[in-house]
Image (cartoon, rainbow, N blue to C red; front, side):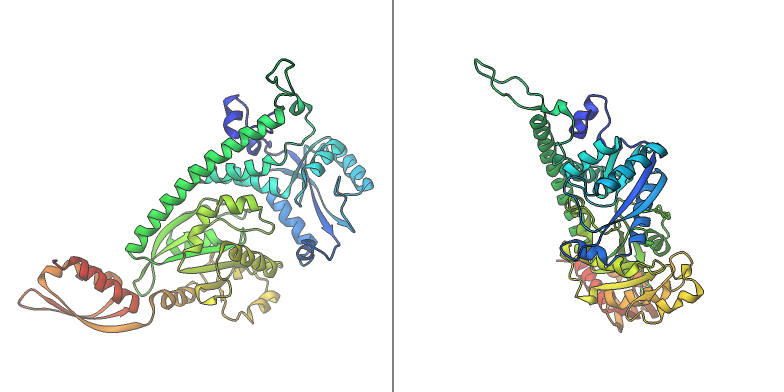
Length: 452
């Protein structure tokens, strides 16, 4: 068994780590507990439709190619500390596992290590909670070295508290020092120590990633190019919108967490202003705190962004609750969600609304309905982004000396040239329309070229 071993130690022994262990197309049962409680954290869960939560859990399972043989919402008046479910329901699920030959049961809720251990014993199969399932997906989606480091760190922090499983080999003691031998170090303590050492190495590596990202950010600020970050619930259509705005070909599928690693591209707005568009990882309700902490370096792009586009799937009946979840995560990251001037709400997938569902768009307020798939509403959205980043436009008369001709191309790319007259002395007189930001950038470019 390698459940308690860090990735490095597991691979060294020729065995796969936890996040790679599930078999594709394995038969799975998905359970969505609906706790009818009015206290504590369950109050927020009550606001969400149980059926929608079940479908989201099924979507998460399908994202790693599991074969769903049974799905069910289980209403609970209270939770059992040992097994979460009551004895009768535990026995019922045990029968389903045996009849359907399920290799895994997914419980759409955070389970304690004790609950997970007891359910695995009772059902004689692997049990995965919501946190473990999301970690599994992230482990398969990470494509860059940074993404892999972040996922592994989150997994180890999660796994560190789960070394209380039912494996008796973890309780064997290794030889101690002294005449009588002493109690020595238990296998579980050794595994914990190895995990802690690996966590410290990963944190050092990710700190280096954070410093490198900060250096890149400083270089971009010197350009200077404003940054626009796309955020939203997973599967809201961020990557499709990113592709529509940039002409890129980022993976965009109808799948939860289809993309994980951040992507940045330059785009030119109608005013000529160049901005950097950043596509970030999708959010989800009950996002594991381990993942938020591990992906903080990546999500710093959101914190530092000049403008945030909050992309919502308006065709989803649970869109309002999803938006609330995203705003809470943004708040936890330090983004002031009350400061609406730097957040634009984008209501995506209007093409998926049924004819009788257009009422959703009647009262959108400051939100912008679009279809990233068809392109509807994109021009209106860009027209809103432009002045927020560039400011009001102005008309200027500019004369470029003969030694400033390289700036002529810059003006044509970043402003609208109304008139251009070449003088006998080699200078050029122009009348241009440009934004306040472009005007400031022009003066910066001009100062850099001036002899000192």
